[in-house]
Length: 429
Ligand SMILES: [Zn+2]
Image (cartoon, rainbow, N blue to C red; front, side, top):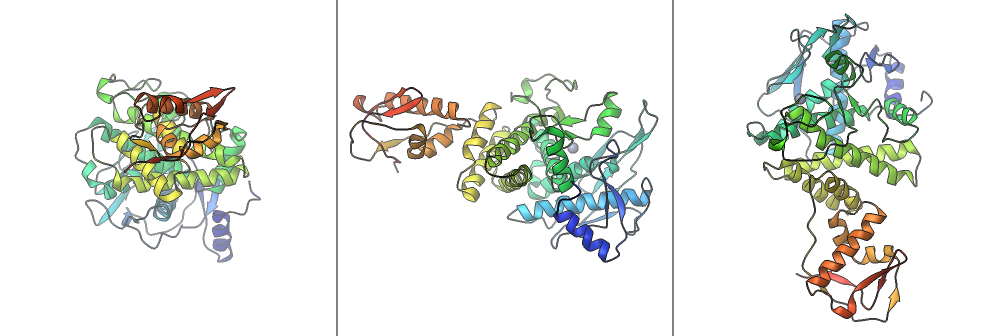
């Protein structure tokens, strides 16, 4: 990984050449000391909302010192802001309720951190097992997560006071997604993730695990606080138990947030897998990362406020994909949200036949998908098999609703859809 020419290494080289002072930065947190890199103070993006770190004047310190912790916070915020600003159509230039956010690196004794509309507060406490003090400000995941709350509050201040478990949970999920995206800005971490998993992102890894050191201190065993790689399926949160058992999905917002975060991690993985067919793993992962960032950030302003907010954001992300990418990831995104029971795209109706009848011909599934691509996308077909099933379902539906005559139905022969007479559907107005 040290040989990669990367944006970060490029910046590091510039900083080193300029003689800029460097400090040791935790790419993840102190539980992974092999993931420490030398960094200078990261420049903030041209447009950014204002923040100040309490009792810090920009001085660099040795690892473990208050100054080093402030450098860690500053760079985590700066790198996360850079990612958000370059992926959003509308850069964030203000906070929801304060001209400037104050960051407290040592807010008090607790295993906790929070955003309260005027500040980001990071606490610390002694891990009872190791007797080591865990500083939440030293975790890139935790700092990026709290910043995520502040960024979401800036874009959607209307969510702040809504009494909805699902909206609360989305706030938590968005924080974790920002942590995930921020981690993937580091070329070293991106490459480490690929090496750690052998290129299979469906294996738990340093990026999918969130707040490992704090999780270990709280759970008393080596688990991250949350894992973006999970299989939790959506049920309305009101119907779920009030549990904090990490293996069970509960109504508590941090617990319930894992459904949406898991779906977004699945989207990252599926786009990576698709891109991987024609590109090296790091290139595919960078593409997947940038697509996910664009989808989630630009969905925020267009997602309707609703008690079923996960579904709103899912629809927003599908809209962004159509606007930004011409819908090329729609089947992946729709399939994942459908599998997670977050959003099921309706079968698009009405349709009408437009082309004149043709002679019987046998057509490969791919051709059919091209002809009725949009309906299939809306069905959320992610895999070839499910695409075939979705095609059959759609055609049965059309047939039952007299959109296709008896003599025009399709059939399946040896895994291929056989088009009996017609082709060319067009959506009616
Ligand atoms: Zn939170």
